[in-house]
Image (tube, rainbow, N blue to C red; front, side, top):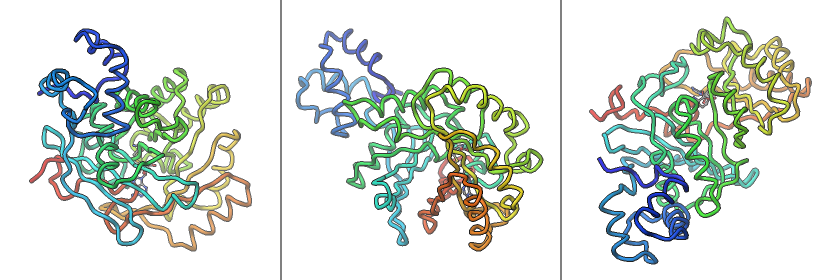
Length: 350
Ligand code: SAH
């Protein structure tokens, strides 16, 4: 298989172009074609010589993903995209639009792995099991396709699709850096959010390396004994240990932290609200409440009244909260619903 041109960052492409005898400014032009202009054929790179275009086409894959399916929600116009990888696996991305009215946000939710090995009980991706990490190019190509097909330029990215981003650290961070290039998508670092179920040493590495992107931690419970039932990662990296590490390191870091909390019937008591309150010492931490979406799991979904009571309790305690609307539920595009479900459990097409 040929290497993917979108797997490379600036330094790597500079080396490749220098070896080919090309000038340095050509590298920025290439990034511009790949991401800003978002073309899908090397022959369209019209400020490159015919020879250079041909060499690139001979040596590299431009787009590692092909569109397999595209659905648009009739409720809220959320769009879901199913992509096929070169080795015939399937991943999904979601374009979320209604947020445009809130803070001018147009979000693409992208996948970082084919399947996932974290095994969270409430998540459909977990049901696939784990196939492999996505390459940097496969992560970026999701955005290229979604932009080209929808004709819309997102200004927000969340790594909240299929997979655990911090189990694919190198490729996720490399793709985020490329998204940020001024000669590419030029997405602001504050508009890129990486969400993790809590891989403690990798969160620590992320903070130590002073990475500038927003960090989101999927907490989903306030007691270890309950968290461990739905999120097996709690056994290896207890959230209390993560909290202690954050106590040490977070105040000095430049990161913002969002705590994600998927609301079930049995984790939104007054005591849960009180325990959550204790975790919000820092001004750069906010709580993002997500109503549990249905799926193959049998976990109890709360009523709107129960959610309202929990929200009210948190408001009284002055916990900074935002509530995520469930988008694209009719096309299984909401949080935790991505599974490439037309296909068999291995993530391969039947
Ligand atoms: N692995 C990463 C990112 C993917 S999951 C993580 O765990 O953060 C993105 C978010 O969707 C997480 O906060 C997760 O808790 C949430 N989620 C998973 N299944 C869900 C469901 N059925 N309903 C609502 N949210 C869900």
